[in-house]
Image 1 (spheres, rainbow, N blue to C red):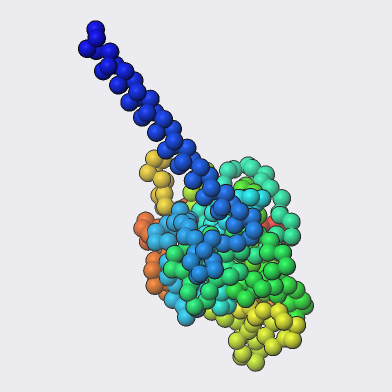
Image 2 (tube, rainbow, N blue to C red):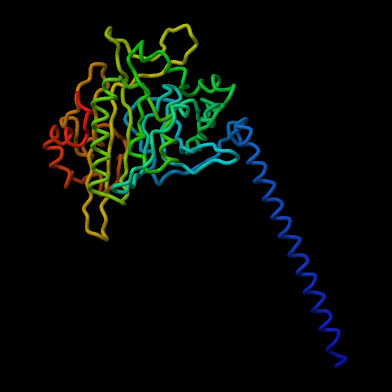
Length: 368
């Protein structure tokens, strides 16, 4: 027995030392992680983006909103492009990305916004959000360096900039830039990713109310033709693919011209210090349902492109085309991957063939 007692004591001491060391190490890691978390939260609470001052940006990911290549390249000469994961600043934290936007800080309008939609049939959803949300800015763009734009997606952090709102207008439109332009040009704040199709998800719906997801849209076009396209798209998603994922990308293209043939900007040449904002010539939308092998439903897809004009009338099926044709005309990368890229319009073809009657029955009161 005397030979074994020292061995047992040594083992017990070694075990106690090991446990003590482990507790110390875990405590250090916990405290370090807590300190980092508090540091980052403190920066968000102060309305600062991590790494802003040195032109270093916090990378984010929102690939899930694309079916195929994330942020596909469009055939365009637009500059100052930033990939935004559209997140919202809440009290003490930043919410998840609710959709993605390719944004031009030069033109102060989005190139496109991409979302994936799942709708429940017979759901009432939420009311239209308060207009106050238009006063928010993308905080991450407020101090961004135009000469050192990130190549990767960043979190937009939609929120209030307070007294710094006007300064944030250097790289994005702010709400006052649109004030008076309904009278001057007859334009609205035209959603890209629409409020209406996000009505069943309040966080996503509120997230669409940002001028990084809107561009000047002539009121007649916005409230008649474009609303009809959006109304029909929402109907298609609810009727033909309830509870399934549908990918929707909505964008702008080109630049409108004034009656004299000059390129059209909001606030061009004004003396009230409002920012110039590009007025797009076209709005477009590409919609993709990739099918579901579990219930043998086939993929379908379509694209819409129509001209943003002041005296716009009703929508037309002539502006609807296969996605593959649209993508080859306007994109360097494919807007969607297969099977959506070459998909036909499938079960919704009959809706486009009898467009006027369907618009009348689906979109009550939305025709001139």
